[in-house]
Length: 421
Image (cartoon, rainbow, N blue to C red):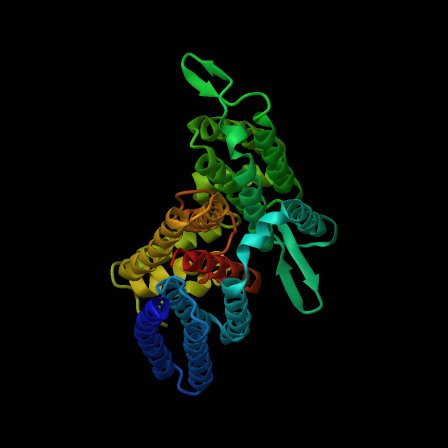
């Protein structure tokens, strides 16, 4: 009885938060409806359906006595609502497609929140094989977009395989490290008092570095490379608490990355465009320049929804959706979205800290680190803090693969959080 009461309290809190987000979504929809009354009815229909699905998921969890975190669903509702509004403002076709992926993503979230995730620890080599297959398929059969060869075309559907490889990567590392962490912690050599990994421990570092660089060379996907290797180092540190892994792993990546800069033109172009986009103002630097102009034009409070010029930014609906938000919602709106992401990351690490077993801790920490890295890398590229990488912003950018994979991640995080009660 006490457990059921606790569950009902959690879901009631979640329902209250969802009501507030629904009000935010309908206000944004109303603004667009006033601007485009003829086409706004379609958006209203989509908004009503999406809102009903979120509340239906809340009621389903209440019915099955699911005790997962009550805040995460509301946070992704904020991001998905903002995405739907921005995409409809940019191009109603994008919004219509993303609406369908919202339904698929929420279904995946519901399923992943209720599976017995602890059984996933038994299939680590299956994850390794599946991840390798998904990495190789685009190399031989993939389509190239924006300089990266990361997409598979299946009929009318385009799938970005790297979005699902990252889930398999975290599952493999959580399974492997939860069993091997004791061996990896053993210190066998030091240099002037600084403890270094042993020769046996260099194996995982060199293997992951090689995979990341091969991925960079053949798929030309700098963003996915940074995310994969960064997640690997984060999980290795969380598992062993040895700073030497981070330092040596970072040095290895710096050496390998420097080599690719001198060998491969697409890597060199990304770095030079980052350093001085004005010298490539009419080609590779055009996106970054337009993004910075969008941030400047938006100012503190923004130009207003539908009043900016985000169409000047190529691929604004995918790589530069944050710039579009900053232009029309202003610095205040951009920081509000950033705070939502920070809260999502905070909850993820909180779930990891409270998990009861090593596999659950590593799984939650890995997924949270992965999401944090992806958010940091794409926002850093949009604001010229980092070289442009072309990864999507979770729950905000247009893209079905990204949306579904991140919904699976949030579902598993909520699943892990439900085991602490």
